[in-house]
Length: 212
Image 1 (cartoon, helix red, strand yellow):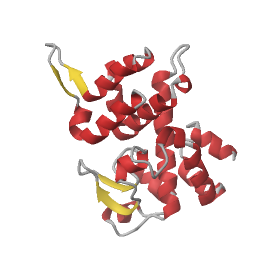
Image 2: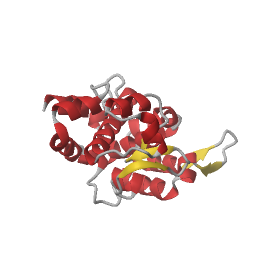
Image 3: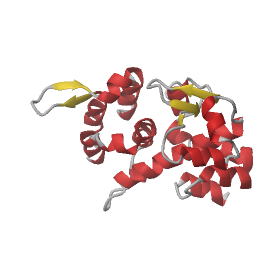
């Protein structure tokens, strides 16, 4: 139980092998359930699992919408540290990448939980400044932030400066607009890169952050 709590708080540097070794599949499923206020129930249309893979757990490598080799529930096989993470699960990374090896359901869930934990930790690194606290955000707002960090990665998310500013100010209607659009230096308002990449998801998150 202590490992689950530490994982949810983003305090495990590599949660996947530790959780598989020490607490197993039951605890992983319980951890996902505890995270539901942020990621939604798996059966819900706007849950993180549905957003990423339409609820499908891919045991073998697939290419995401950008052509990036991915596995499980949106686990990027080319991101820094991915090779070690896969090897820590006991797999040959190159065989997983080539589609010769599959992941088990428990391993897929474990990678997902770790990715969510990393997203929460990254979100806190931005919002836990001074007296401001990520945990003080309304659930729907914290959920949107977590999903965006999960999808974009921390580096791209940091580029949404006006969105972050609006969230910190409690201006959620403005934050909703910032998900969908961006303003150029000449004042021209255009679609955000996020909205161009995944328009349906962007619209759902824009509605969710307003409480709709």
